[in-house]
Length: 321
Image 1 (spheres, rainbow, N blue to C red):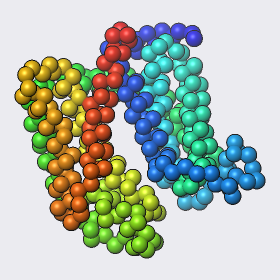
Image 2: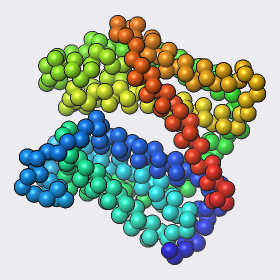
Image 3: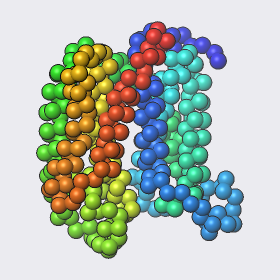
Image 4: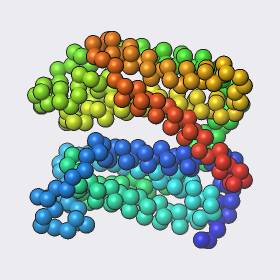
C-alpha cells in the first residue's frame, strides 16, 4: 500500500492509539442495535419468490429520523477504521475507499442476516444510508480526527497520572450515588406510565417483561412506535449508560495498581460487585418486584468489559511509536 507523508505525522502525534477502542465500541453498538432481541428464524413468505441476496428496495415514508440514525450509527466505525489505516501509512484516497467498502459490506451483511430476523426488515436504503455514514466518519476523521484523538489522549494521560485507587473509589461512590438517585426516581415514574397508549394491550406489555424491568424502560418513551418485545433493550442501554463509564474509570485506576496482601483484592471485589447488586436491590424494593440475578450479571459484564476495553490500545501504543 502506498505510504502517505501525512500518515507519518498522524503516527508521530498518536502516542496512544484509540482506533481499537473506537472500532470495538462501534461494532458492539452496531451489532446490538441491529440484531436485538437476537431472535433468528427463516421467513419463508418473504424469501419464497426471490433470492435472499436481494434486499427489499422500497423505503417507507416518515423515516427521516431512522435515516439520520442509520448514518450516525456507522460514523464511529468508519472513524476508528480511518484512524487505524492512516496510522499504518495508508494514503487518504486508499483509506476513503477502504472505509466506504468496509461500511458497505458490513451494512449489507447485517441487512442480509436481518432477513432471518423476524423483528427486523432489510432494505437497500439502509445499506445506502449506512454507507453514507461510513463516508461521513472518514470525513470527520480527516477534518478533526487529530484534534479528537489528541483530546482523548490528553484526558486519558491526565487520568492515568492522577487517579489512585482511593480517588477512583471516591469518584465512583459519588457517581453511583447520583445514578442510583436518578434511577429510583425513574423507576417510580415508569410505574405510572400508561403503556397501552402506545397501541398495544397491557397483556402484551406484561409478556414483554414490563413489570420486571428497571428504569431504563422510560427511554422507550422517546420512540413513538416502541413495541413490547423491544423494551428490554432499552433497559440494557440504560444499564450500559451507568456501568460502561464506571468500568472504564475503574480500568484506568486498576491496571497500574499492584495489590499487596488480602485487603486490596477484597476492596477491589467490593467495588466491582457491590454497585450492580445494590442498584437492583434498591429498584426491586421500589417496584415491588423480586431481585433479578440476570440484570446483576449483565451489569457486572458491562462493568468488566469496559475496564478491559479502556486498556485495549495500551499494548498497541508502543507499536505505533
